[in-house]
Length: 317
Image (cartoon, rainbow, N blue to C red; front, side, top):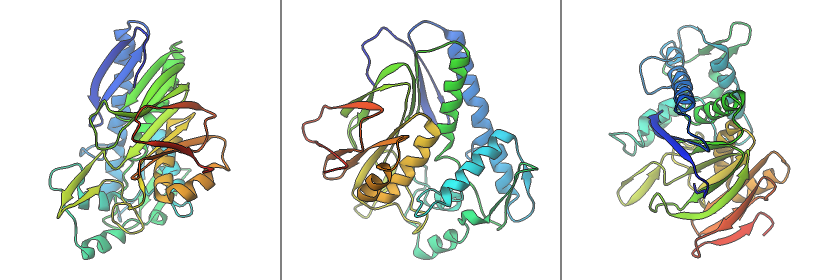
């Protein structure tokens, strides 16, 4: 991110990621309340600790439904709908595969084909049973685990945006480890894959938009001369393998950004562009292995290319 205004920066670490809040005025009390809000939602949604509502659901897999709070239930319902979309690379039930690969954690490795096949049998989103009246979730097969890691940050970023508005704040930027949400006008950098943290491909000018980027450079490991990244294809059980290095989604809500970065990653550039031409609420930037930067459109942002090694084009090319 980059901006020339005089800003106050507040930071912490939550959800296993650096959290940054930018404000045009000094307000430590507001920053503290924002971080407390993020922590409350993290405690509800995490699968990286023994205690959370999501972990309660996972521990009861194959045995009984678990009633959860309405916010958690609605998020799970949204995640299931995205998982059941045609050709979806999004899957809320992907937890067993994530734990098998352990990409980004100690002990990551390439599993055997037999191990992957066994875990794939536990990742059917159809086997996540929802009861609207009771706000309960039942994983019908023992060993199933839901993982909301691909959607939780977007949901929480939207709640932070709503809270800041309620507090009368009309200018702020919150970065939840890659999920950026803005109030007012800001410049947001597009990171260069496999480069230094401050190396940018370009910069987006946005006004009150969410910017979510998912890239193969975020978490990966190398084995036998090959790089294995964390964006798993729920259909094969292996990391997605296509022409892309990153997908950035610009939208009003960060929850949509989380869902659509995954969906578009799975679709690839050609199919992704075809889908985006039919939607006015979602825009995207694709960065390919061939160093093409492909824009779906620029209704919600303006993009400036900074790195001469990349070629700027659009979905009509």
